[in-house]
Length: 156
Length: 83
Image (tube, rainbow over the protein chains, first blue to last red):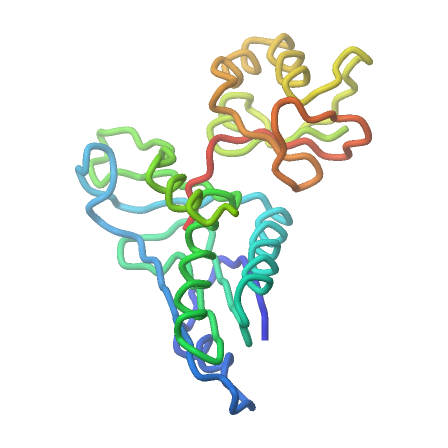
């Protein structure tokens, strides 16, 4: 099973992961990653009340699907699920979920990391911070060079 | 063609999308950005640092020198911060 979903609603990581093994007996490894909204982010690390995630509808799904296709070319995957939320999210809320399934663990670990690294730098999502201190103005999160470097190491 | 803006480009332009008909000499994505920037102050502010603006044509990432001929939808946005 391969699926990419962009949604406002929370996701159930356990149920998503279970779907990758449902009805089959050849899956030897499932790796899951859940990214959460952290409270210690925000302007100068002063604390965050919420993040609002904007996305490019249509392209967000297609761009992630292109990377899932690329992951399937590189590793023998039996399944992959990517769920990315949009809208207003508070500290502790899950933002993104990536699960990869394969016959053995090495492919599942590598593909999950590959998908997350590309998702950070090429999926059209933008985070805007809402600071805890209402006197401070929020702003758009800037892209990190370390995220670009993480994605770049997968270039062939 | 339809032009879309996201994140702070959307806020600066004051529009999420607009329909535009650029003249024939506007050939590349970079040309289009320059042409849009010349429209008014809001567009000029959005494109004041073109080096940080990314683009997509018909929902695929493109470089500034990509041709816009035949594009239905051109999107401009800052570097992505999802995940």
